[in-house]
Amino acid sequence: MLLSTLLFAALADAIPQGGGGNGFTMLRFGCAQVVVDRIDPLVNPGQAPSPHMHQVVGGNAFNVTMESTDISKLASCTTCGYSEDLSNYWTANVYFKARNGTYKRVPQIPNRDLFQDKYTGKTNGGFVVYYVSPGKGKVTAFKPGFRMLVGDATNRVSKNLKMQTCFRCYNAPNFGGDNAAPCADAKLDTEGFPKTACPGGIRSNILYPTCWDGKNLDSPDHKAHVAYPKAGPASFSGTSTGGDCPSTHPVKIPQLMLEIVWDTRQFNNKADWPADGSQPFVLSTGDNTGFGQHGDYVFGWKDDSLQKAMDDAKGCMGASCGSLKTQQPADGNSCNVKARVNEDHDGWMKQLPGMDGMPM
Ligand SMILES: *[C@@H]1O[C@H](CO)[C@@H](O)[C@H](O)[C@H]1NC(C)=O
Ligand SMILES: *[C@@H]1O[C@H](CO)[C@@H](O)[C@H](O)[C@H]1NC(C)=O
Image (cartoon, rainbow, N blue to C red):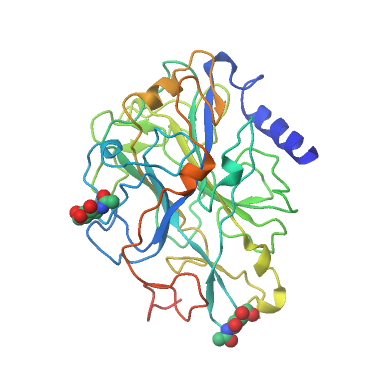
């Protein structure tokens, strides 16, 4: 009880008083795993296997190749609490590298329920998705065919972009230390992997750009058509989703954020950590710094459902919003896509999938 009270207080700090008032909207909803697979229709369309493993949530139109089209018309189910959201969201996986050099995939656990949500806490794996709007008429929802990428899978150094992607080191069980807004905790949030064991596991937050060029649904690097506000990446706050957009990207889009809970608790035995005391976690790209954290997005909300939510007159918080349709956890958990690449990703492995012979 105490923890959720604290968390609510923290969120209330980050959002206007009486959250959901004044048209401020923060959709927050769980999406179960739709598949864990080594494909990437955005960066490596047509490749099965693609270079590294991903964990994916959302609609069942997820595929080796996905045209820039209205995927809400191709999918027949979704793993997300809002049943009109047939989008796909995916990130790299996290693995534990034991002292003996073998790897084990770190499982994901559902986040907690907040704001009368009865879905998020019951999802099978997966993660939480947020969409934020400062108020009615303030953001333009994504168009069918829209997609984007945040982060750089090849990066291994700090770019001072902690407000773009970060890790939170939960300092106690049950999401302990969840006080500041995402990526805003000076101590518990880091741009790279936490250097010490986290008693409650590790959370990833990935915040997408909030400005759009108003024309292109995609771009060759999947990034150039979107931008952060002039002041750079920012956590959501009451009055804005990060301030003014640059003139090249004048259209404010909803602030999209992914929040993933990696259950590292079973890997906290220091005797299994590297002998030099360094941290043992590695992204499926082979990245043991965490600076290469990235997230992919293919928009797929039905019709104008997302715009309606962003423009709700009173404002919405959490997993229910006006006339938006929702579903039961069992429905979301039963929506799956069959993995296209037939390989082990859950046993103890000598190599990360796709990383054979790569210097680590
Ligand atoms: C995935 O793509 C293949 C090849 O285009 C197609 O045959 C298959 O039906 C697609 N699967 C889904 C779930 O859309
Ligand atoms: C490597 O270490 C892990 C963690 O202690 C253990 O579970 C696994 O069986 C070991 N594998 C080998 C091949 O020794």
